[in-house]
Image (cartoon, rainbow, N blue to C red; front, side, top):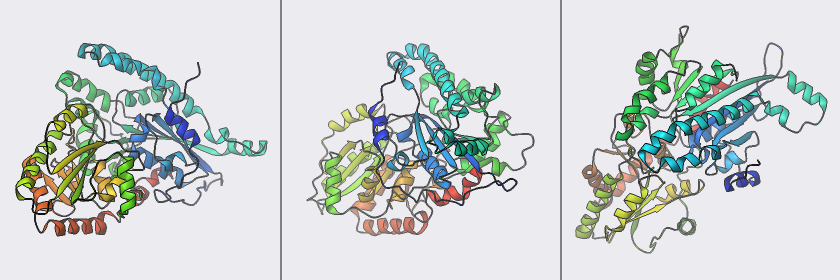
Length: 494
């Protein structure tokens, strides 16, 4: 039965007219095999068991690999297509977006939401369906030669392509770890696919996310076992922080005996690839006309004729981002503005993102009766989010890492837009947010209120923000995604 295309897939089929961002990765010299002068073509499969449009790090990886060698690198970008990726990804000729056939398991989601017992009953069914469908798709993709599938001018060219060397490389994101990691182990173990390199990019630990919910605590041990016991075939690991690298090397991999016996260079085996913003996140602000058009497009109700400051927070509305802390702080600062507001200042809080707790907090917000603060939620297209950050005065990050080891990419995007950030404290955040230099780290809602008061209600607040912006410009702005990727990751694809 022919599958019906969704709107995002139709957009992708039509998207051939945009300007490409050439800054994410530069063209390198075409690679040749010195021994016989034959070209080495690379078929790179970038796999995400999640929404491709909301997987920025994997989109950046795909672009960097594709632009490293446009003629000899081909990227199959595989995942769920719930929202469209960046225009640069859509328009890159040697990137092919392959949607997972999720309609075969999505019907289970409705039953899982009815009751927790239904969740326990149908979750294994969903995992089994995912396992079966993804196995079939990955086997087909891995066995194909994308260079032969393109329009060939003559048979001689086809014969030449068949003689060229072809490397198969798989780059996957985790979490989600279930069933992804076991699935790849299974395919490699049974030799259903063959890979020259298998790279795992660790964004967080899946079992630690599961551990946030008390209902799932009995399953945490099993989830951790599945996450770390089936990765022995991986040739390289990437991670987002030095703290995570240390934990993988000294704890997780040792516990599950995942180091290769002949491994001498653990630094080469596990590489830290810090998230860095591409050039789409810029420090240049929109002009007044562009700003007002953005407000209209995003359906933001902001009175631009009064004295106001824009504050932005991007949240997933989940347990590891406690929005109640920000809500309490907004109530406190609103009371202070009511008592001490000599400049008739208004604070506009814009909250982006969507998630399971959003409606719960929207109901609370509607009952607050704020006088000098306004909270608005918005869902932005990928191309409008950088524009919003560029006109804001301050960013707020509530991400409290479930593993205490990952770093929030939302802060990276804000820093790329020259936007100082107030971030909640946890063990690893200091690798990114430098307290007093590019932002402040707060422990609770009281400290958050104190910093908001310092930056917006005191005479020195404006100069403090300007100093933080200058620090970002002098330090963070000079090391974008392209620089970090070329130094840390590009050698894996040579």
